[in-house]
Each structure stands twice: as C-alpha cells, then as structure tokens.
Image 1: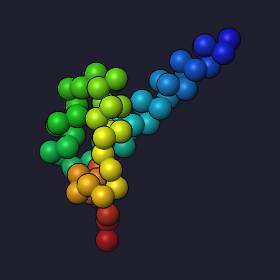
Image 2 (image 1 turned 180 degrees about the vertical axis):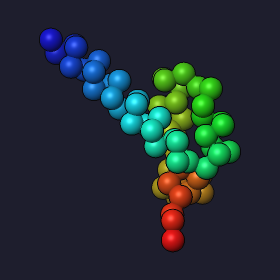
Image 3 (image 1 turned 120 degrees about the vertical axis):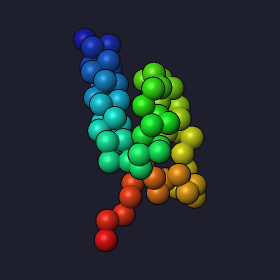
Image 4 (image 1 turned 90 degrees about the vertical axis):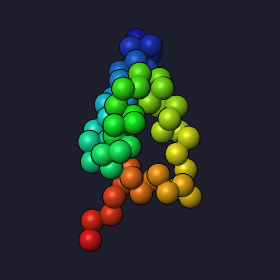
Length: 62
C-alpha cells in the first residue's frame, strides 16, 4: 500500500512538472521535451534561482 502511494505521488509530481513546462519559454520547452522522466527531473533540479534559465521556466506577465 505504501509503495502504491509513493508511485502515485511520483507520477503526480512529474505530471505537475510537465504542466509547468507548457508555459515555459519555447526554447527551454524544446530542450526538455525529449527527456525521460528521470532526466527531466534531474535537469530541473539543476536549475537555480540565480540562473537566468529560471526566467524561461516562470515568465513574469506584466
């Protein structure tokens, strides 16, 4: 039962990550789109707040 919950939570997290990428900068989206789930998570973990690439993930509307 615990394993089922962990697998479900992992799947939901990846789905949320992919949903966020829908609004990301097209260049970043194209870079991350072909990655496997594991590679996608690793690539996103490498993004930092001080990195300009974060602006491509979370564009500010205004």
